[in-house]
Length: 178
Image: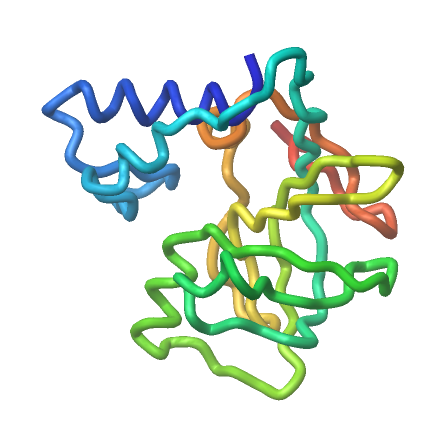
């Protein structure tokens, strides 16, 4: 079963359990994903007959220099964030971290002309290139620590099957020290 199918199954199970009101993947008691978003997240992708599963997600921790932010969370479907990864390559990505967006809405982040993010993100490698980059957790914003990396079980709940990799420039693997 693919990662998107596993994610959909997880949210379907949450929706079917009336006791689950919110979901979160942090060690504290914050649950940023409300019940009313479960049905949309429980939708499995439509696949054509004979279509193979997409490549597995790879999860790394990496620094990104933001060159074009998008401060409207709901607008990320039409215009993603743009930046340079640790190898100074252009990259486009969405930020899914609910706690980060809560800080944005409260205006608790000190925004600069050239912002730097340290993120825990996932991507798929297609034809030798990273695609579908998803920031799962923003760890630092302009050097200010915001969060700790998600543990492997939380990543499995979000992505399903995945593997970890050391970030560019020999940054530590997500699972080092576990």
